[in-house]
Image (cartoon, rainbow, N blue to C red; front, side, top):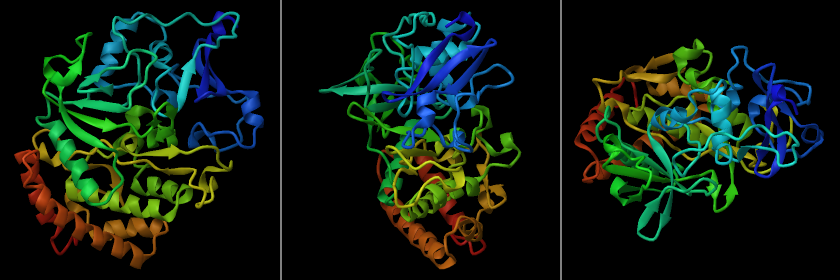
Length: 422
C-alpha cells in the first residue's frame, strides 16, 4: 500500500466491509470484494443501497472532505474542539480524526488499521487525554461508565454504556430541560432509553475535561447502540439520506428533505407499530415545542443481517431488521425564546412555523406515508389526551425548570385552539 493509498479497514463489529483510503489525496471509501459477494451481508448504510455495491465504485467528495456517511460519525461542538487541537497541523484533519477515534464510533462502525498490512498508515497522534471516542451532536457530551458510586470516562479501547450530557452557557438549565422532555416522552409511552440526572462532581475526571462552563447537573443516558460488549449498528437520517452534517436542517437542503421523507423510510423499513410511534413523536415534537428535531436527531438501528434490495423496498416489514431508534436529543426549544425562533427544523406538510402546525398537517403527512385517515385520527387524539394528562403531573416535579413549565403550558394552550386541534 503506497502512501498515496494510505488507508484503514472499515468494519461492522468484526466483519470487514471496505476500505477508507487516500486516493489522489482524497479520502475515498470502497466496499471489499468479499463483502459485495455476500447475500447476507450486514448493511453499512441505507444510503449505499441504491444499487448493488461493487469494489469499483468509489465514494468520495469533490471538495476533498470525508465521504458524508463518515463525516456524520465525527463529534461536533466542544468535544470536536478538544480533538482538533491535537490534529490542527495535519493535512487531512477529518480523515485523521476518524482514524483517531475509529475504534469507538456511533453504532457498530469501526475504522481501524489493518494488522496484516505490510505498510500500514502512520499512527494517529497520541492524545494528552485517556479517551478517544466519537459522539455526534453539538452539545458537550462524553462517554461514561458507572463504577459503584462514581462515574468514569472510559479510557481509550474501553467502552461506556452511557452518554453523559452537560449544560450549556448559552442555554440555562438545558440538562434539566432534556430530562423533563425525556420523562414526559416516557410517561406518554414513547420509546426512550434509560436516563437519570447526575452532577458533574460525580465524575472521575483526571484529564480535567469537564471545565467550569459545563459543571453542574448532567444527564446520563443509556446508549442504545451498546449492549454489554455488543455493538448495535445505527445510523442517523443525515446518513440515511446522504447529507453532510451541515445539511441537517430544512433550509440547508432547499426543502428537499422533510418529515414526510423520514416517514416514508420508516414506513418502508419498519413494522406498523414503528410508523405509529413516528406519528406520535411528531405530535410530541409539536406539543413540547421542539424546533431542533433535525435529521441527525432521528435514527434507525440495524439488528443483524437483512435482505438486500433498493432503498424503497429494502425489507419486508415483518423482518424487524431495521427499526426506528429510541428517542434522543429532545428539548423544548421554546423555553429559550430570545435565542431560538419557533421554526421547525424540517417542514411538516409544507409548513415550518411551529405555531401554524395543526392536526390537518399531521393527517396530511400520515396520508402520504400510508397511515389510514381513521387510524391517524385515533393516534393523534389518543396521544394528545395522554400527553396532557401526564404533563399535568410532571409539571409539578421540582426537576422541571420554571422556564420549561411556562413554555409548555403556553404551547399546549395554543395547540388546543380550534384551528389547530391538537
